[in-house]
Length: 382
Ligand SMILES: [Fe+2]
Image (cartoon, rainbow, N blue to C red; front, side):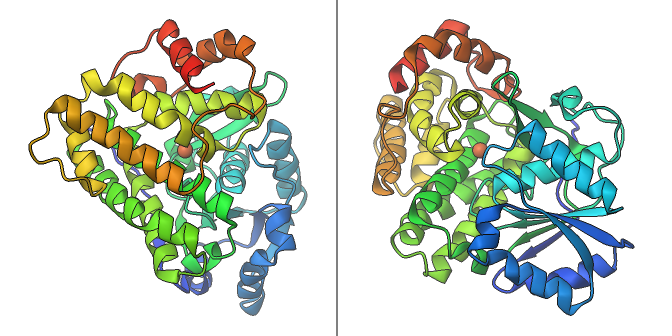
């Protein structure tokens, strides 16, 4: 069946890609950028590489850096105010998923009326956002490559998922040099987020021959390189492969969808402000086990992409080998096996499950869950 596929128009990749940005900006007929980033990236000096690149070419910009991890509606409104006050006509996002998502929301508000909460859901805006140059510094959420973003509505403690092809970046940048300063815990969490995108994106009901191409490639690349990047953050080859792997699955899952690993993780991020990648990594093996009855022999392919020899295995065996491969990669980068000691509250399971069932990622799950199924899965991971 016919369907549209959305990708950033220009993709700058590899070591030194950041230096290619000015040439692309000059082609865009724009005057002044709002740079959306966070305070940590400014403090550790990562943003200096961007500011030097822009300054050297006399490209005008103002900076908005109040973005929190798990960005909020307040963050979006704050950035939008700075954009309007300074007459910015495009947005440069610089950072991991949080600045990227916040920047998408700001760029959407600049061309569409109302509040960002009005657009929670799928393709609810009429107009294309302001142009976005999306520079990724993690590996990663792949938000620089996708049509999705997530904003926390702090008044409801809810992570709103917005799927909107109008927010796709004009230029997406993945320069592994920007990722070398990531601490181990962030390397592990963002890397496992990327692996979750690839595996959920391959198993989702919305997967196609085209999206499989991206997601399977990403499973192979991330499985081979995450531990290397974790063990030695200065290993530029491993960083380069992780940048590539997270980016290709971004193009896959953005066009095929995800499943209830993300639905469940979104609620834990919204309720307890927990890191998105850690939530996914903990939940993923349990949801894979739950989905196994509906995934045919796809987990055999996933296991093989992760380097498991499945020769002679029956379905029960390769499903289990696949889940174990995920658990062991997660453990090797010190992700905990459950949410014990993370201040989650079993009394919240009913409401978390209700919210997860309504999440935009839920319809993509290979097995249609009931609210009781999701409660059971939360009980297992808590
Ligand atoms: Fe994710």
